[in-house]
Length: 162
Image (cartoon, rainbow, N blue to C red; front, side):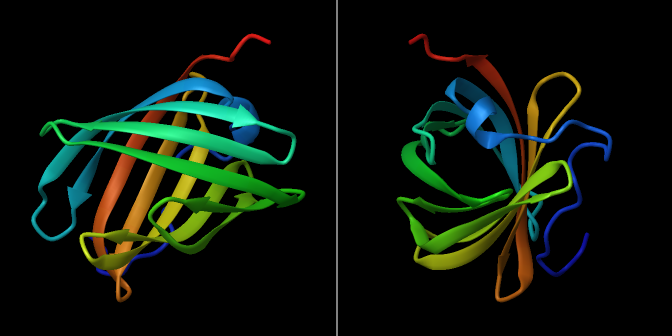
């Protein structure tokens, strides 16, 4: 285990196709994953259903979380394209803006969230796997120390019909 929070390695091979967020997340997607506490090893599983819409500049992604312990939560991402391969984003519990960019065939996001009175830093790496799912690996840190890791696999349930 590494002690310091840092961007995770790519979650897919270097020859995987590039992930286009506004294409993959348009419509309904579902993710399953878990968060692992870096200090205790405790795992907390969850499922998230997402509804995404793209207006040509901003991807809006409404997330409905259901945790294995019964807790439920709802968050809304707004990711705005700022240039070729780059974007900024916000979410309900975010401190400031997320910074996103293409790193080869994967999407990287860096942002800070308020969780339980703390502000923690997230480093996401999302990639499109050969089976058509998106793999999301996230390192979570506080004061530069790694406090957890999130793994999630997301699959598309279909795009909305016009």
